[in-house]
Length: 126
Image (cartoon, rainbow, N blue to C red; front, side, top):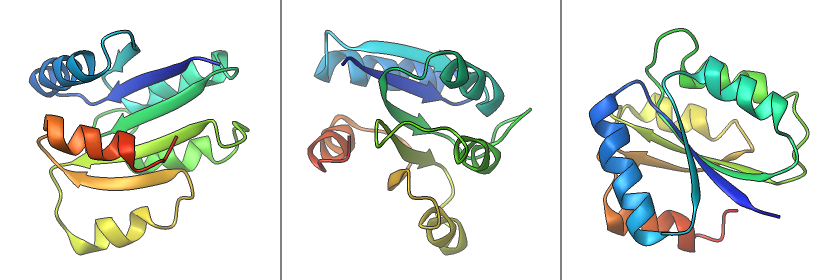
C-alpha cells in the first residue's frame, strides 16, 4: 500500500520549502498540500485506503491543527496514519497536549530541515 505524505500548512513558503525537502529525500513519494485542516480532513475521508504521514501545522484558518486532530479520531486507518506536528509553537503546553493524540508521532519546531525530516522517517513511525 502506498504511503502518501500530506503537508498541512497555510504558509505557502513553508509548503514550498517542505515539499522540496520531502521530494529530495523521497523522490518517488506522493505529496499532497493542503492550506488548512478542513481540506486535509475531507481528503482523508474520501481516500481512506492508503497509509498517510502528515506534517501538520497547528495555527491555520478554517480548521487548525488541534481541530484536525480531534476530527480524525473518528476515522479508522488501522495505524495507517501518523501525524507529525510541525509548528512554530515551542510552548510546553502544546507539546504536552500533542501527547494526548495517539496518531501524533512527533512534535517538531519549524522550520523543517532535511535532518529533522530524516529523523521523522527513521523514527519508525509510519
